Amino acid sequence: MNAVRAQRQMGYYGGLSAEQRIAQDYERRGFAVARRRWRGDAGEIDLITRDANGLVFVEVKKSRSIARAAERLGARQMARIYASASQFLAGEPDGQLTNVRFDVALVDHTGAFEIIENAFGHG
Image 1 (tube, rainbow, N blue to C red):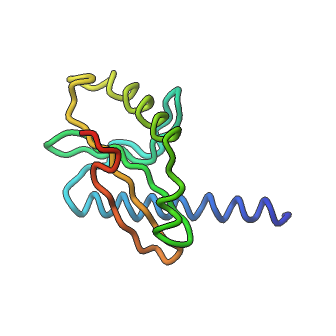
Image 2: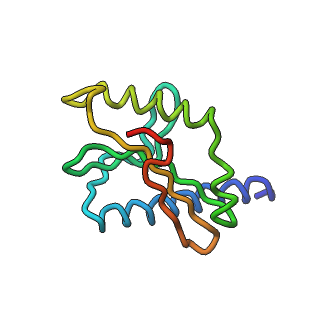
Image 3: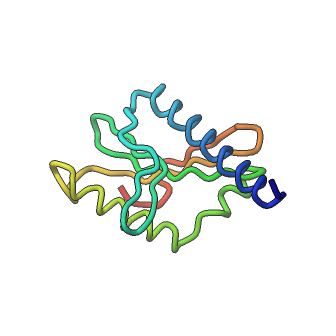
């Protein structure tokens, strides 16, 4: 196995681990995980959770530090997440009128994390 492939695999499994850790935190706080890695036409949403108040679309970012993880989310990716969320909402009973929030979970290399609720400023 070459070094690039090994690095990609480590990143992939590190991302899965980070997503699992965040999903467990939402479940601990009373949310049900509705979908993991849901793929719409515009792209993927890492986690979609649900509680009595509605849906939370969660983008998980993992890097060496919380600050570096925060730097990895840009406007283009946010637009893709919005578009995918809109597509997901088409299948919900209240459609686009569903109460939603967009959170970002930042995970560092040790597994420590910070969740920024309503990180996109909508919801």
